[in-house]
Image 1 (tube, rainbow, N blue to C red):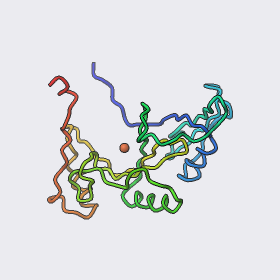
Image 2: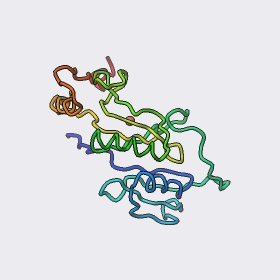
Image 3: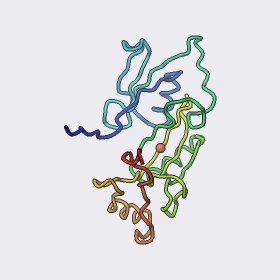
Length: 198
Ligand SMILES: [Fe+2]
């Protein structure tokens, strides 16, 4: 029987210390909308809010989990460099390079510090960092709980045959002001699931 397919990452549910601080971040700073929520949710008996950056009901379902002692001190450090298992960062796509740089400018104007980037994850793109993969531009900063948020654009498209979508690549390189003939397509076959026993 053929395996059904996934479409894309849809949403996540996030546990936070202080709902108000998180709403200041996701709604106040990033401009998302609140669509729904409860002050004590039936699910975990915790206050929650559904927030969205698209036309869907929620991108993140934010639950407030206060520590038992009632404190809500921000955790030390952030998810990119602490040694906890789990999520390292959460990435949100913006329309294009122009929107990406507009976000960089806007966040800097609000005094937001970047954990990493802005950079372009590529070993071949003329603006690439020459050591990472995906071809996306990316910048990273933290929400009030130390979750690292990535803003990205132009993630590499993969064709049906499993290789880089060549048309996408040529068009993207042109859009960035370079000649596709002079920018080699990045390899993506360093590792394949089928090779696991090799
Ligand atoms: Fe990422």
